[in-house]
Image 1 (cartoon, helix red, strand yellow):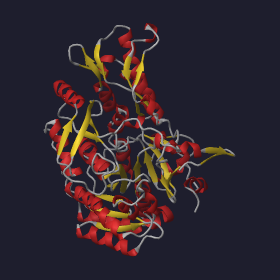
Image 2 (image 1 turned 90 degrees about the vertical axis):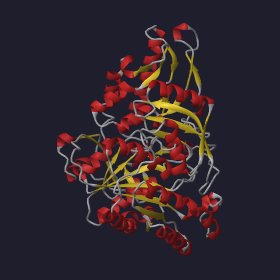
Image 3 (image 1 turned 120 degrees about the vertical axis):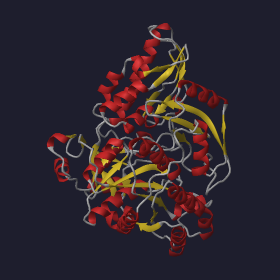
Image 4 (image 1 turned 45 degrees about the horizontal axis):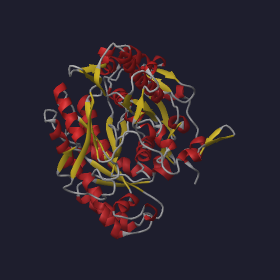
Amino acid sequence: MLSDIEIAQQAKIIPIDQLAKSIGLKEEEYFPYGRDKAKVQIDTSSPKGKLILVTATSGTPAGSGKTTTSIALAQAFKKMGEKPCLALREPSLGPCFGLKGGAAGGGYSQVLPMESINLHFTGDFHAITAANNLLAALIDNAIHQGQVELKEVSWKRALDVNDRSLRDIVTGLGGIANGKPAQTGCDITAASELMAILCLANGEEDLRKRLDNIVLGIKKDGTAFTGKELGGTGALMALLKDALLPNLVQSIEGVPAFVHGGPFANIAHGCNSVQATKAALQLSDWTITEAGFGSDLGAEKFYDIKCRTTGLQPDATVLVTSLNTLKWHGGVDLKETRKPNMEALKKGIPNLEAHIKNLQNFGQQVVVALNHFAGDSEEEIDFVKNIVEALGARFAITKGFAEGGKGAIELANQVKEAVKEGSKPLTYAYDLDDPLIEKIKKINRRVYGGKDIQLSAAAQKDLKNIEALGYGKLPVCIAKTQFSLSHEPSWKGAPKDFTLPVQRLLLNAGAGFIVATTGAIVRMPGLPKKPAAYSINVKDGKITGLS
């Protein structure tokens, strides 16, 4: 079979003007970026589509096929004569050149132009990075010029590549002309507060308000130093003006796709932009969106943060898994998961069961999509199907990677049945009026399967500051490993009754939530021993090796 990039480069792309007009956009509502992508600005006040969330069981180092399944499902709806639209996140350069690779789907279920989407695209990530670092420079300059005195600066710089050496750094060395020495660091752009702000902003004025609300540090008198007080919001608005608009592209089978915003779900809130989701709902009968990594990360944040703050209500949730994933959670080495192994499958199945129950506890109708691989055992497939149906969820085999939309017709039919039956109104994991610590405890107990939490000394100090500043009622965004329901990557299956260690509590007042970092999670990933960057090249004017 051809590689992902070879399939993408051979695909025929519908000209963006033609695609835009086919979904009802007027000329003044879209702004082409070349022949194959455009920015879109429309009224989203009358959404008509059904909203389908795609999430997954706990991840493996090889991923789960969630984006591929999302695209295949949308393509299946199109083949059935429906009017679908995708709302997906933009890939970060970090994974593209690191370990995981790109995030444009795979095989015959991809969004195009694949190379552009995985690399510079329309420049959204670069705009966010520039705005983030301009804000950092303005803070340092205000301190250098004697315009403000801060006892603590909480704003960090950002970079959209994996660079562990920048996690903790000292700036301002070399004398007074270079500013005051300060300990700081870099987050990857996908984990920055500006990324979250862009993705949660409901239009230009809401973006401005959120930028004003950013807490940049603590003043000498113990009060918050905000973006509004610094005075740089206007400049940030100028940098983010175009980045705020959703990007319109297409799938390999011509399904319109809004690909916009890209917060990671293990260290951020893991959802594409509100603007993109609402645009898709405005223009389609079926909007297929995804939330990063497992349902304990992306889906929980989709419900508790994105839906709570916007009023969005998913009509059903698709849970992606595979025999390989479940065997990995049963203790088998990743290289051995393609082999039949019922014993390992039985050991790993509690992970699937926990994710199904979690989604049902939120009130969702659940459809399990088993991502099919050549050689999958019929006996093992039947075993998983019986477990799924015994829990009251629906089941479908998907072959979107190899067959595109055709390989997800069964899934689309199951989704339609789930929507007919109807999901309940969302039941959130916690109440906003709960104390901050109680929110974390409830997520740990109700979603992760843990028993208690333990705050580090630094987190206890953070908690005191956050509550003193009056931000204790905000939602919580927990940063933890994607490889386990717990904080410990090596704990497979469905660990129970553990204590969740909370390292830091980070105030993201502009985004409107508190980030709780747990375990050994970091907000700037490092490169693996053999980065994917070593396999990427350009030959005869074409990019090769990107996946």
